[in-house]
Image (tube, rainbow over all chains, first blue to last red; front, side, top):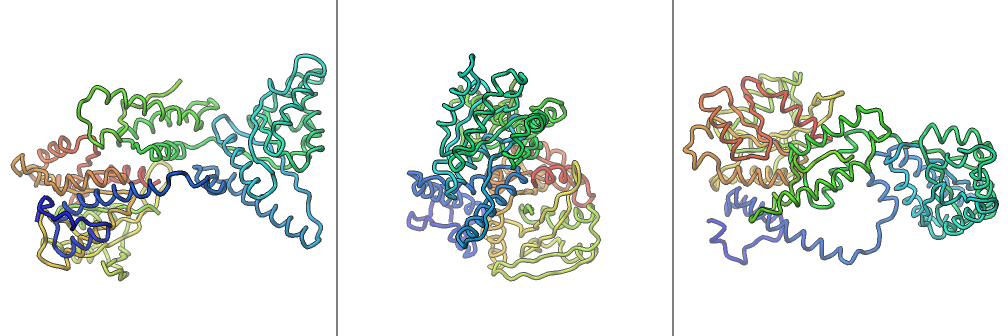
Length: 324
Length: 203
């Protein structure tokens, strides 16, 4: 029996039913594939319907686990989670509890996941009840340092106020010590340290920047070392990890690379890896490459009259270009 | 560990590929995990000679279950572990024997779950056939289905035989956009290209 002759009511509802039809000798293997596609598209619609509207965000920890790579970061966050929980239980039983000093230093090149992890950490700490709000305020030197005496303390206090209850993320924090003793950056650091004392339970500060610069920065400010006990290294992503990030991005958007497209991307990533720039393992650049490739694919297909589902899904090599 | 499935019509050389590819990777004894449609699992240990005798046959539908072996695929810097599964050949028509139909259902169920698909065709068969019948609806369906879900490559087997070159050219045209790897399971040709593909896909 060909599928054209198959009565409407016989249309299967599940993969298992298709397999049973095949076993029973009612359909050929080729017809089974056709029915698979029907079943899958029905299931996809059902899943889509059940997830709209979004039933809130998934627990932050899962979101962290979904990030590609970052193995040591994930392990450390789990460690912290356990530590916090046990200190709380010790306190509940009147045992001496270690004070929770969770201010951190994130060290790594641009695009290695520092901001992303900081944002998720804020949410994890909110879910754990450590931070009341868990939001992220991302600042850099220019947001903290002013132009005249007294201006810096005022600007820094303003940003700290915004971040209360959540995370103050200071990017390229080493630049605060750039100008030496007389620089206003010093004033920003002093104001920050004082605020950390005053708002012990309501503020998490993360200092972020390149590995070497951050180590120098912490070394040359002894007051910071004891106040930032947690240091996390963000290594450059490997080619495989960057490729996995690209795949994940495309999958979420229902695109796929053709085998040749994948080769082109691998080639671009490998060339970058061989360069000595700080951007060789930069996930942000990969995201930009993929987003540009989706736009290029649209441009390539735009003139065509008839398009198959596959054509709409596939990203070809000519869609992929290195972004500068 | 990523799962890799060999799929294709009957007698295109799937089982011989499994055995000779394992041999090519340095396996001396095949530790098979044999899975039946009812869920039963059997463990077998075969030498290469035994495996060729027992698994490979001229008679279609020699393979009526899913036979899986674990392999270390060499590539770039080191090796990646994969589980390679040989499956029951598929037919264009409805097969008369229930056992065979059950085995085909297992094959399709497995295809839905694997990360890497090696779709095998016989290049000389494609080369010899009249152009309009060179590629069957079934092979088109496999390619269409598998390439959207898994890492997918087409293995044009039996390149050692006559008409294979013509068959390969046709396959490359018919399946443009897919990766087509010419191999000879018998002569152990093209295995390095297969490894490169599988290593890459098995992340």
